[in-house]
Image (cartoon, rainbow, N blue to C red):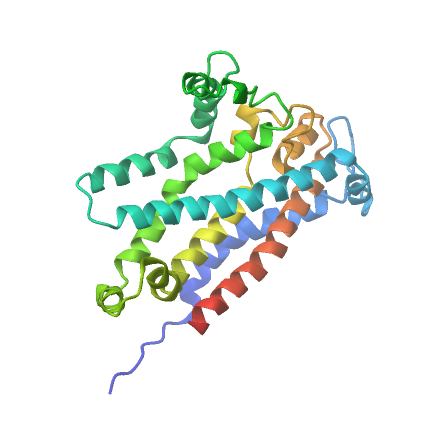
Length: 290
């Protein structure tokens, strides 16, 4: 008879203490300071209740940042997963340059977001950028745009850059999920006459549920916290076309209104929690039902 070994609860105390000091305490302090008038010129910090939150939700720039963050997170999350899954399916097949291609597609993820931003700033240049030059070369010069300075295309350009950087990371997780799917299942279905789409829908995609949960949640949270790419590519502009939560928070702290900036940060934290937890529960339930 195998007996399970139970460790004393006090073994977790050191980790719990460190977590409390470095994570829980700063969050609680943030909640407090979000309800103060803490600013650059204040000699004393006064408690003002929910005034910062009232001011925040009456600010059209803040509402715009909220909408832009949701739009960015929605499209970036879906497209990162679609591209990552597509690349994983492609590179799960037997190809001569399989390992090289896996490295090439994963490489953008290891490049710092700031460097990626500078690279794409050059690529999107309206006159000498590679994107417009390529369009002119193939006879589609009419489609050339000022990708980062036109409000109609700026957000689209940032999303494309983010997908280029992170699809390789999603690919690796999906690829790991594909590697553990028994080949017997797909081969038996193929022998029974199931086409690619039927095998994908009825066998591959359901068995990829854990990989999908991890990828979707990481993409969603990361997209809602986007900052570096937006700062380097557009700085939230033109106008406020690409202003997101974190660039709005930076502008608040740069203005010296620390209490207000902390309140915006608290709202972002609550928003990520409010969206992330139901998504996680829904995706985990989907795993159990399969």
